[in-house]
Length: 265
Image (tube, rainbow, N blue to C red; front, side):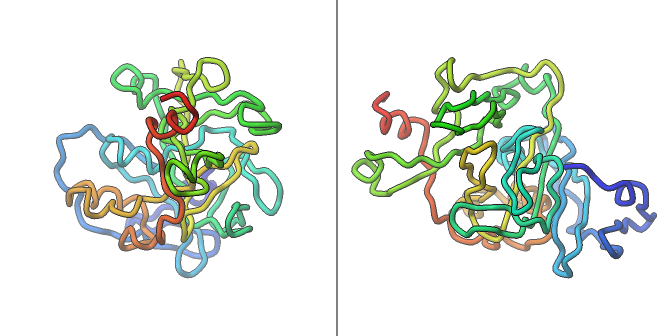
């Protein structure tokens, strides 16, 4: 996501941010609770209730549940919009993004952070997965695509209904790693990763591959402790609870379930 120069340079001492057409005050939710986790800055942009775009950089814990909210696509991925393919870093809330379920949907939120080589030294969260051209069929992807470890792709498989009772489901990209078509890579320099959110769980197209947009899952608020829930919600100033993302209409499979479905279990 590329921040407009006026949004970067015209920040007042009171914390006001310049949006497309007016000043937007970033909602304040009190001090961040104490945490023993390391933290990192996350860049977020969102569509306000007035239809303006606001920007902020939020320091939050560097833990999987927070990072995955902002980690889906690596910089350079081309997302299908009503204006044609747009690089993920150039998307701005308010743009109409093409989705498999709903057609064009207004983008409500973009989150990102810089993944550094140091991340790979401490955990597999610093890895990316390179999906080579045509790995999932002709033009899927049309060109190599770099995905974050917790990215989920849409699966339509003949055995899906028999095994799991659904016609389609999202599977984690790491379950498809084979060293040939889907390859785990460790970047030698910093890479910015992005995620997109709408009012609903949606399937977006990136380089021709169908991917899940951000959705917290049906039980996130009960599974997270108060501190992590608070930290996660701070990344989404346009919502008050995670229910704002709507129901999870398409289930996620585990890596084991994906391998079983593909006859690799």
